Length: 142
Image (cartoon, rainbow, N blue to C red; front, side, top):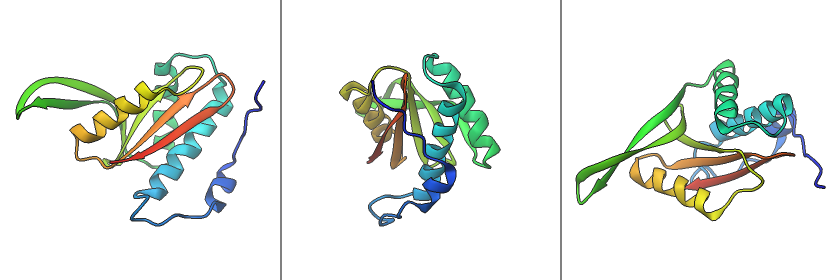
């Protein structure tokens, strides 16, 4: 069985910073990741995605970030609207977060987030999986 790795907020802030052009919105994504670890530390694994989404909204708001939940992402075909996706969270208007609750992240989850990023002007997305033992994170830049 895998060990759950817990990273404190202090440890998160001491991690080296990457180049801003390659990794935009680092400060925001670092805060989101720290908040996700805090939510998992408090709740553990095994809940539905909605529970983690609501807890993350509360935690991010407490940390002073602007959070919108279930944000419609319009999909167009040759310029015509054909439907909407709903992204789980949009933080500070610049980072999309897609929340999962399962054993692992899958290629289909990454494809979903990539489609959300392509359908919007949002450049950065985080895929957060609240697994049974730890939070798995995939950062994507469009």
